[in-house]
Length: 145
Image (cartoon, rainbow, N blue to C red; front, side, top):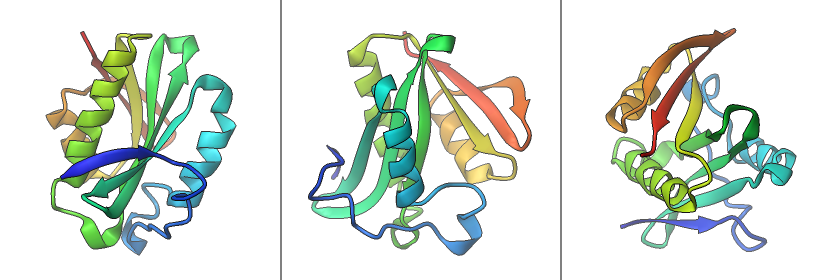
């Protein structure tokens, strides 16, 4: 069963990593933690994703006031636990958290051009392309209500 736990002093050093082939698409745990710190004044929420008691990935979102939206900034599943649906379920739970929080009714995210697995997962979750792009990052958005 997938569950989320806020990152804290007891669970931030888990050594979770993406595969070498995915490193061009997504940050590992140190990149996620650095972003969580950088966006701490924007209510950053960083999580460890667990399958029961096994840590399998991490995720991060924060407020993006200038767009009146949540920025679903990071999500990754460790290379050992991929293709089991953990990312999809964790993303669903995070979107539900955002909806319950209620500050915004929109979520934005970017994925790196070529990361078809991420694009397909986000489309399954109801995200659509905005037509905006910054270098190799493609923007998607989803309405929460």
